[in-house]
Every structure is written in structure tokens, then in C-alpha cells.
Image (cartoon, rainbow over all chains, first blue to last red; front, top):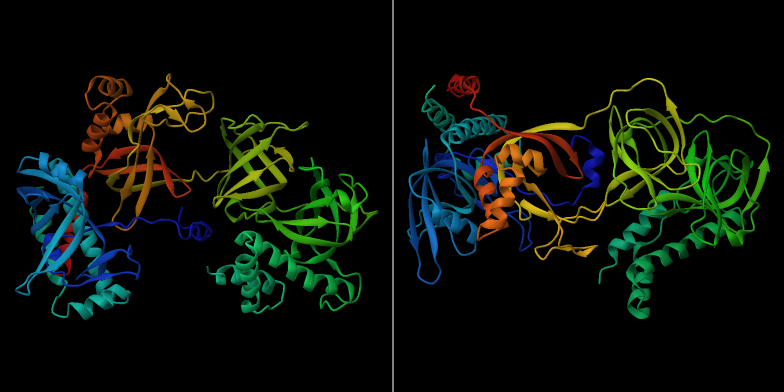
Length: 199
Length: 414
């Protein structure tokens, strides 16, 4: 497939969709650094994960525990999606009409799979707030949730291994941006998340 | 308007043959043509290229200013011809094809030990007609490029002489994955026959060897025969075309020999595990054009881009979407049987919904989306042109062994 270098060059410039990273809530919550790759208005925005990977899109599966409708003219929905390590704040507004309709229909609590874009806000008091702008949200079963925990744990561990190897540019950047964070805490979190799945 | 890109391109073309031209000079010429004379940018690029061709090559051929092969007969190997070169070659005409235009007297393929090239003899060149299987000495022909493929032009300044040579040429087949536009040979197995998409087409399908697969086409022409699925062929002097970044083999000029035995073929199949992160519009139940050999998806108004309104459409199921493994997102296309087994919605059930539900076909889309979006699956299929045509797609199951292994890995070093 793409192992063929000729193919690669032939398709150069073709559209590449940004992959959806698997990240636990506890790691996403620590993000403080957001950047744009390129100067174009349409260049993608990335949130830098503390384990040293850029993320323009994430895939999470958890329990939707709460949702609220807000706004008068510009209606939007907020929700809380809980994974074994913490909570994701998700939102869908009128710019994501499909996602908003999907979210509006779901009765809490429910296992949901969310594909969305992470974004970072700084509140007036200086603290940071991470939320996920939903592209799509669907109700799934527990099996899918468990598979996601495995997937997220595996990819978190992979990132930590790459972090410890310490050469990738995004890893270097993460070390600069998050000097106080030791990724070992995310290994611990992955272990705890895995341990919560009943054998 | 920016001319630097086109100028770069031209400069690169010439630097291949050892000529350096000031990019600024090229840009100036382009700008003048486009801005002052309203010439189309593409046309301007072409005419500037030709201008330099003339500037460099005619004196090089005439006054001996050329640096290559000054002494001797100046013979070149066919494989060494680079677009823009004036060359003298000796080769064997291995194929002749019907001229595509009255201004062409003859076209075909000429080969020597080093390789083969397409040639075109202009009607105005008054070159003697060449015969397939004979050897010729061709002096002062020009190599240029037509549709990305090197081409030998025999024009009025070219002399063509038949020579008595009777060497047999044995070209070496090229692995399919290493093919590039031009003339080449392969040793491959015919693995699929496709519906002819054009009335002038005799056959199209897929050839494969150990390294990959490639589409082939044979156009209707006297003496051309179809290939047989499952047979192995040695094919010489086929034309490798490139269209939209995809290669295909045109076998009309080729010498085709069927072989005994079998060769292993790369299935081209890959397996990807991941989650389905997007279902694209146009998924679900769709209507297709009923015209024989068309099968295009119709718009909501039952409109086919070729055959216009088709009220007697045929229903079909498909899912277009993105499968994401966390590292890369793959464009996937699921056809009817795969969609049915993945979603549990059969074509008949989908028809029933489409015709009776107030939301119609949209309802099928929504139901399918809710059943597959965000789910973990493993897809087996073949990747063509950046899109995976999925042969099987199954939901992943939770494996306790994976779970245990990850627990060990996460706990191990903490």
C-alpha cells in the first residue's frame, strides 16, 4: 500500500484527513498548548498532547452523563462524557447541525462514541478549559467502550514509549511546553482504566 | 499571476539535458506571452519550451556544438533519449499502430537492447514507410513528451534508412510496482476482467505479479485478442499511461505471449483495524443508472450525468466513509454485500424503508450511520488510488488476551 514510495510521490498533495487520536480524559485535561500548522486560514489547528503528539481530532468512547441545551438564538448543546480516568466536556452548536441533532436525541446516561476536535480556552481567571467540538456522536454498546479503553491504553503507551525515546519534534515540543508533567502518570492512568474492565 | 512555477518546470526540463537557462529569463518570456499577448498559460509554457528546444538543439545538431558523441556516428541508446534531445538511433520496429490523425504517417514502437520508445512519423516528413520487424537507422529525430510519455518524432529533417540487422531483442519484464509512463514489458497474470466501459474497448481488467497489480486496456483493432482470466502472459512493448496519477497498461502495441504455468500474485489485500469515524453523504441506499454498462449513481432527481433522467433506476447499497486507526485515516468503500452483513439491513429492507418512511432514503442513511459510526471494525480489501475497496468488514470483538497483555505492559514499568 503506502509502503510503496512511488505511490506516495504520485499522490503527493492529495487530501489527507487528520487521524483521530485516542486519548484519555486525564491527558486531554492537561493540554495547555495549541498551535496552527501553516499560515493559511484553513490550516489545521492542533492541540499538543503532553505525551508528545499533535492532535487535530480525537476519538473517545465513554458515558454521556449529562447534557444541557443552551443559548436562545444560537442554540448549542453541552455534554459530559466520562471515561475511566475523568471527564470530557463536549459541545455541538449550530455549526455542527448534524452533531447537534444527534446529541439532542440521546437520552442520558448512554455509552457514546464521539469524534470531534479538541480545543483549548483560557477562562478570564487564567485557568484553562479543554473541550471537544463534536463532529459526530452515536450511541454504542459496552463492548465498543471496552474496545476503546484497550485502544486508548495501547496508543497512550505507544506515545509514552515514543516520548521516552525523545527524538520526535512533537516530543521535544511537549517537553518544552509541559516541563512539569511526567508522562508516567498517564501510564498509571492507562493501567487503572484497564483494571476497571472486568475480566 | 505567478510564473515561477512554470519557469522552474521548464528550467528543470532543460537541466536534465545539461542546459542551464536563467529562470528569470524564462519567466520574462512567459509573462510577455501571457500578459501582453493573452496566451493561455499552458500554451505559453509549451511555446517557451519549444523556443528553447530550437535554440539549443538545432545548432547542436548542425554546427557540432553539441558535446555528446562528437566523433563516431553519434548513436544513442533508445533508453538514453531524454525529452528535448535530438537523437540518432538504431532500432527495430516492434509494433505499428493506426495513425491517430491524417497528419501522422505512421506511429508505433521502436526498440533496441536498452529499451523501447513510441515513435511518430509526420506525414510531412516524407519518411519511407517502415515495416514491423525491420531495423532502421534514424538520424536527427527529436525526443519529446506526449501525455507524459517520451515520444520519438520523425520530422522532415530526419533521415530514415533500413539497415540489415537481425539481432533478436529480448526485453526484460519490469515488476509492476516499478512501472512508470513509457513503454515497458511485464510478466503477469490476468486476474480480473472488467466490464468494457466504452464501445471501442475490447477488454479491460487487472494484471498482477508478485509486486502489485495494474489496470490494462485493449482497444478494438483487427488482430487483437482478449486475454483469459487466470492465464499468465509475457507482455512486451506495452504502453504505460498515466491518468490522474494512476497507471494503466495499453496493450494495443504490445507483443503478448501466453505462458505455461502460474505465478504468485500479490493479492494487494490489506487489513486495517480501526474505528469508523465518518459516514459520507451518498452512503446508504442509492439509485443507479440502469443503462447497460453505466451503473452510475443517480442524483435525487434520478438524473444520471450521462444518460439524464432514468425513472427505472436500480437500487443499491453502499457506504463511503473513513476508517481511522489513530495514526492514519483510510477512505473506505463498502459495497452492497459488505454493507448488508455489517449493518444487518438488507437491500430489500432498505428499499422498504426508502419507499415507506417519510424520510425516505435519508432514513436508511441515518439507521446505517447509527449502526456503524464509532464502531471498531476490521476491514479487508484492496487499496486503489487512496481508497480501500472493502471485501469484508467485521466488528472487532473484545479479546481478553489483548486486555491482559496491555495490563502487563502498563503495569510492567511503573
